[in-house]
Image (cartoon, rainbow, N blue to C red; front, side, top):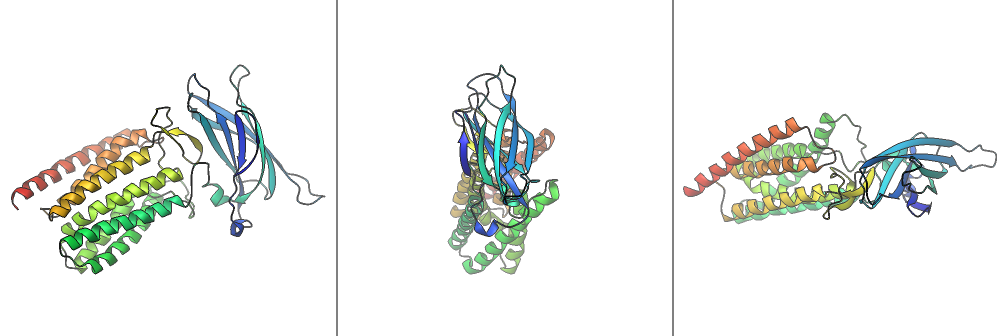
Length: 363
């Protein structure tokens, strides 16, 4: 971000990609972030901000271009502290721009100060992804770390029970690749939004589970290992992967929590509004880690019986906790779909836990 100027409560930044290889790529776009201080008290409100920009002429005889646009910052919470709103402008000429952001409020209302900055356009698909408080590289890095943790968990449990580690390592690697492809495909199929190939978001855990475990099931037949048993041993590792993946979501503004002034709220962004939020991604990651630890201990003590019951219990528990946390997101799912998933998850969890309890008495 190129920071230039601002008043006591207002500041403007122009998004900077800082990558020479992307400087001349088309299309170009302009990202502008307006920082301001939320009022100390009052009611939640929307804030209209008027952005205006003038392009610095490249040549002496070139006429400068201009734009004026208004954007609305929804749900500003009194007492939330610093707020960062990021707007993107696609229909602007490439080059350097002098940009001003000025809040539009009734005269009697507390008014954050206007501010201005100078910065250049950048490669638009990247501009659309960047905002204060997020890092594009953190999500793939943490997902990769989660994949390593998940595969390691599977191989440790397989070795514990005398299975072929080499063959399972290949199956696990292929399952991770297919799972990521499935996560992206699932998102594209169920979403109306257009997701850039450079986007660090736009993936669904449901697609990963379908793709990864279909691969594991196929691999179990090739390795002559009971499919249910292999799914049981793989389930804890997937939960460890979710733990790291949700931390990556928090750092990239995916699945963001609702704005909040609670003492446990953390400053984060949904790629548009940076504000103190309920850290729902971290809460879901912690829940997945707890499920994974319990499942790992059970699988370490002995092969679950009946085969596949631990797998069912793990994912039913995750579904239940995920549905419980959905209302804490800034864009929660529909109540009807959530309650249906919650009911089915509880039913499957009860059946799977009951089967494991009965199975353990016959060992």
